Image (tube, rainbow, N blue to C red; front, side):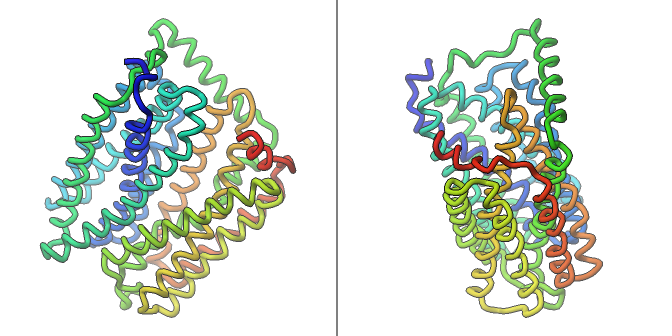
Length: 427
């Protein structure tokens, strides 16, 4: 069936909801789940940070998605494999060696999700005409954020409910993952019938493979020949140095009892804080950041946005010192941190767009996102060990000091004064 005969409303929202949900499960839900299953902070941070690796190396195997089968085929199959991975997690959680086996299935989930990202983004451009691509950008972003809300909020709240109802934490999380696995099996079947079949969605002929890979490596090499490449890569790796560590230990801090330096919240309370108030604050910060950058450009806003992203980390220094019991005070502190993160992350995204500009902007942007994932993975791996060695309060102070390299690197970046304002006029 031709793409024009399929209403985008019946597949674009579901496609990007399905793109966002496994990512948030791998990166956020897994941290909370393992904390509730009594895995140490050092192990949680190390092994869940390794799960960033598929997104780090994603640009390296993106040609495979072009060479074999269609984007539509990859989307449907990856969603089916994601469902199988979720089912695998559900089945292994009640076992004795659950940590090892569930991590293996989370690895499957991570690689399938990263591959799904490649295929779904490519299919989006093939399945819609150019004018519809622009129109549905906001729609796809909205449903991606809804997936984040579902993962950080609804799934955590659901798991918390089953924890109370069953009295068995492993069983509660197993039931939760069964629900998600069934959902993904259903959405794979839905997309098998409801996704359009664009004429241009074809695999690259086998005999053209050498040419494709040659072009890929040429494009990859051209990224590292860009002007000011060293400060740019250093900025991509270090701008989120503090946040990369904070994000791994924030939920464990909220869940740990006061005797261990935490706030002692229930699973459902953490889901409510991050999935509703936190996500709304994050989204609001991102929206305001985009509007601000469109007025005076990235070069004007990059330092204020860095301040907005990093200074709110001080709320965790306060929380770890005061250990307040008020859920509203804790929620407000998290909201401040998430708002600042949303506002400050705008500068990071805009810089990736700016630095990727040129002949190979799509491929170069993908490489930038790989450095972004690497910048989250490496600090996250050691964050749990640092926290266990010095405690929560000293760890959050350390996080604040880790924001300094990002501020220093800003002065070495070369940014056109008009960039950012141009994006608004072009849109």
